[in-house]
Image (cartoon, rainbow, N blue to C red; front, side, top):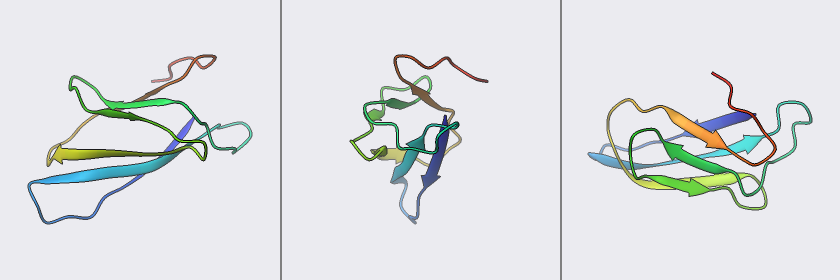
Length: 74
């Protein structure tokens, strides 16, 4: 699974957006859960594999992606 993330902001909170793609096929992964570890912030990818998480404070987070049929890689 590949995750591309981008953000631009000078505020204290910002959105994180990106795409989740299957690492083998390069195709978008719809309906994947994307969340920030140890927080209540998250989203689900749309049919094109895109996600948006709003109101993220400025600090370092671990982004976790999960979907049925895929195993967790570290």
